[in-house]
Image (cartoon, rainbow over all chains, first blue to last red; front, side):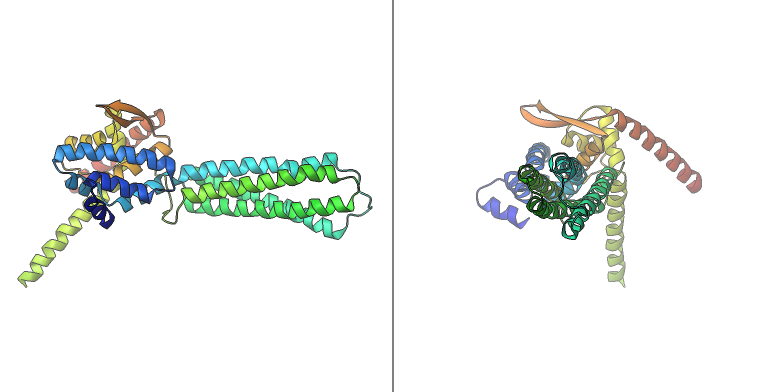
Length: 224
Length: 122
């Protein structure tokens, strides 16, 4: 409320000052901010007309910090849901550079038994991929149930596992290309595709974190 | 001693007000669904409808209404769209089919509960 008083002394009317402060609190949430500010301003103007006092209208509405925090909590499950879907979509695309492209384009390997330094990286990349998939599904289920905190933890785990899998996969692809003559073309396709999936995974985690700030308080939906 | 009684009185008023806020909070979703079921409304109209229907007894903390509406919309119980009302863009909320079903269920549970409490207390 101190910021509102400061803004008022700077020439804003009370409602403008309240809306500006609410906007400041939601500055990183463009869509929510645009919608909530439009609704709140309309509400406060009506309320001020009925009460014949802008100050009373603002006082009845409550502190902007509480409103912003409650609004963020209310939309968190939806943001998490879309982020989890994005991550699962990314994981299904990641099957291409991880398995489908190398399997179908690499020339036959010159060894009878795969060297150990390639084997452990291959299994590590696959295991991390499986972990990312399982955690992504848990995240989707939690966001559907409105369990924001668990869902966010699962989504961050999934994005981390995907990033590690693509890092290990990249090293594997480079070493494989060095060990198998004629596999450079495959490498040219696999590396950008791996980098892209890793970026999408990080993007999904970022979306989820932006939608689920530290103030998140457990279940977002009461009726699911 | 007198001071003690006065202080107890203040505490009791505070407790009553806290209880009322808690009770309202517990039934906020039900109240919002019921108010919107009568006709599609924007947020301010929802608050006014609840206040007027209850003769001022249910005076919601207005800032809690919009987050609750977003939550209900996220749960698929409400839908909303922009409409220009009196020269100002307003977000109008309406009940979805799922929201209507939920409201019926809430009403039935509420009736069962109030009947049971009444049977015990009268």
